[in-house]
Length: 350
Image (cartoon, rainbow, N blue to C red; front, side, top):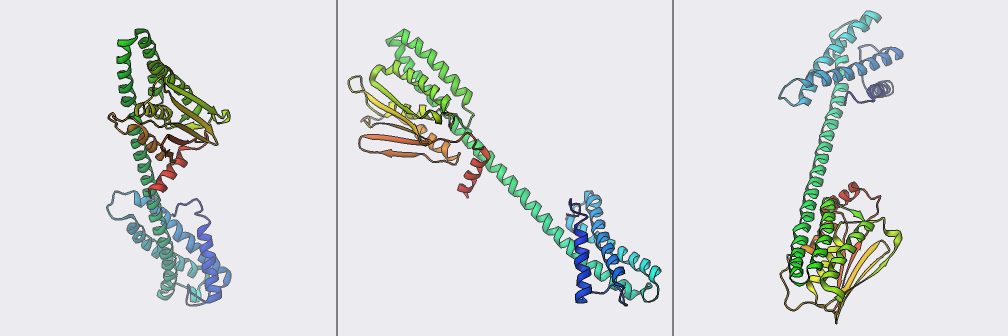
């Protein structure tokens, strides 16, 4: 505290307060006899500045020593010695200049020392408060950083689930195509490599522009058209003004993959999937035709999306009726910073 940028202002304010306290309330005396007003003001000001800067010197020099005692104890102990010397020098100089009842005496020394010690005690109390406040803020900042690192680690774990999940499903589809149509299998492999390159490129990203995500989704739908031909009908209704908004990468692909994985559809009875982007929301809905013999599900798909939005401080909406399934994803403004999202996460966790 003593080396604060306002170190020349604070002692002056304290000196003015102490002077007014003595002058108006007779709250203290520096000598047995009453000092002239001008001399008292100068003397009080000098003592306040001397006490402040002696503490500043102690804080700057002595506390750097490798001593295991708490720094506040060192500060206060050394300051008592400094104030004693300041009081002695003050009484000697004042006595030499004014003489008479202001000459050096034990009583004058004790009165001046009492004033100096009160000033010192007040300043060291404020310094202790300032010291522990800085420690508290440092711990708070450290805890905030740890929360952010923890959130980033969890998000990375969630994102990393996309790769094996996506890769395993498509290798299985490619294996089937190789026995049915080699040319389609070759085209499928080319598309798959492009899509997987996109996932690897953006896997570590929290967000990506909606425009890029839609391009990726189109490539994925091309894969599905190779696999299922006309048994999947994909419809779009997109507000072009929202293309610069952001969305977690590959979430739309995961939703479409869930449709394919958990529903029955054929060329004679195709599945209709609708993508609607408006009002800063992305809505994907499909007809609900659940498979009777459900295949193994790792739960990565929808839960992955829920968790990723949670770490962004957002929530998705899931609605299911007897014949339809709908997921609504909030779009995130491009100017929304990671810091503001992290604060939202931390507040929700507390």
